[in-house]
Image (cartoon, rainbow, N blue to C red; front, side):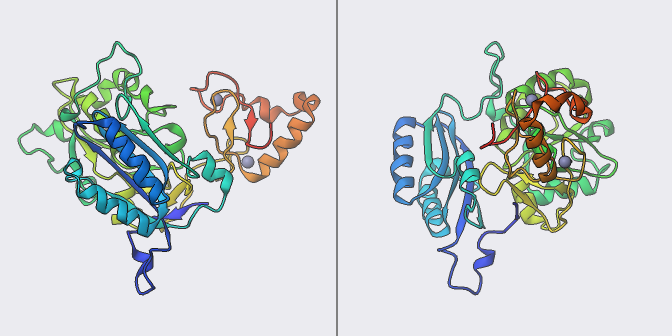
Length: 362
Ligand SMILES: [Zn+2]
Ligand SMILES: [Zn+2]
């Protein structure tokens, strides 16, 4: 259950238009919102009128939206928001795709209804209240997908010709969570990709603090799904001062990169997305993930298996799902099943031992 990166409107070419087709729209905008409650109320009525589903977050610092619906309705929404000065320069990432076929998956992704919420800040990077939220104006420089690609292609070539040579050593930093990086990430020969393997975004500042030496003095190329997580995280890195100036972020995230490089470019595997598509792959169709229980090559999250303790999504292949259900039915056999006992922790970050949990089977 995944989709390929589909440039906007591509499948509609030559047909009767793609207004009847389904689509997913992602965008965010950091800007001072003069009247956030009024804007949220507008979103609620406007999106309902267009029969859009998904999530909209409106804060005093901007808007973050993931919306699904008919392409024609999404295009109307983009036209409406583009006419508002607040959204000047916004990158509206609209992709046509199949509509939701699995009601259960769509519901879990929040793609069966519309949720518009007023928030204090768009993304919460620092859950620790003693840490100051970095200034978004200090975020790293945006690189377009092709700029990002060419920097990786020309590693060793100066990003900043003014800087001393060692400052141009490139590291790639994935700002996403471990269940996302497990099925896809950038891989560039001779370049280190740092995968923090965090459970949630708010764990990133601590990882950055603890691994600052891996970042100091480097040219840091960050990426995430659509770009928003890198905005605040790159500002956080740059707030560390000297040695942390050269931070760059992939503008439009993996989504724009895969549209630009449909064969995947330097991105291996699939882009985890937070809508009914679950993941979006490239023409490469390679599988990075493995089944947690048997270790076979597997990257399909459509069963929505989660760790029963920490609720994190885990990869369990269809064969193991069947075996595990038997195991749950016959708990007295638990002591016989050494392979599961060896798999007590799905990740070192899980606070408790692993036990299988699938929606509809508890
Ligand atoms: Zn398996
Ligand atoms: Zn867990």
